[in-house]
Amino acid sequence: MGAIGGGTWHFIKGARNSPYGERFRGGVNSMRARGPIIGGNFAVWGGMFSTFECVLKGIRKKEDPWNAIGSGAITGGMLAARGGWKAASVSAVFGGVLLALIEGVGIAMGRAFAQQPPAIAPPPAQ
Image 1 (tube, helix red, strand yellow):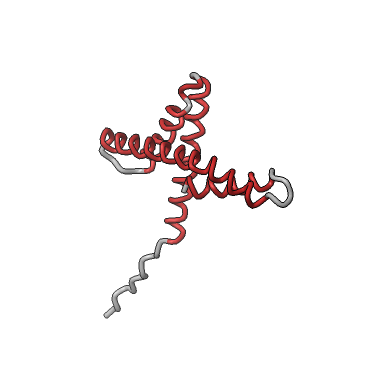
Image 2 (cartoon, rainbow, N blue to C red; image 1 turned 45 degrees about the vertical axis):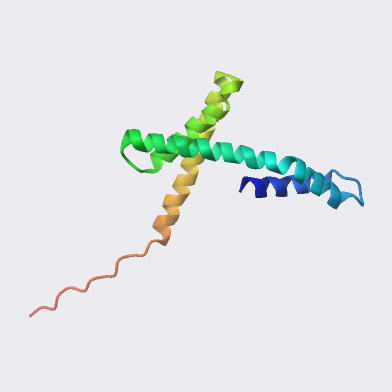
């Protein structure tokens, strides 16, 4: 996901910033230079997130949306830790809120598209 999204983003960005007649080549060069970096960053984020989620599942002995929310917050904080306490705190809150939104949408979609159980007719009166 990261390599494809990053490659697409940098292709468009490189094409827009290239002179007329060189747009395709500029897009490809930009994509080749920056796409793998975005893909690698996404892989690091995904690896840390999965690690923290498994740790939280092991500690809490539960598998629920709170694990993903906590993992998003911890991952955001850890990735921004080099920027200091303020940057780590802001990134942790942002990561937690982002994962809370994603989990909330997933729960809402699951409920919206869940099949309702068939209605059971009452037994005939005798």
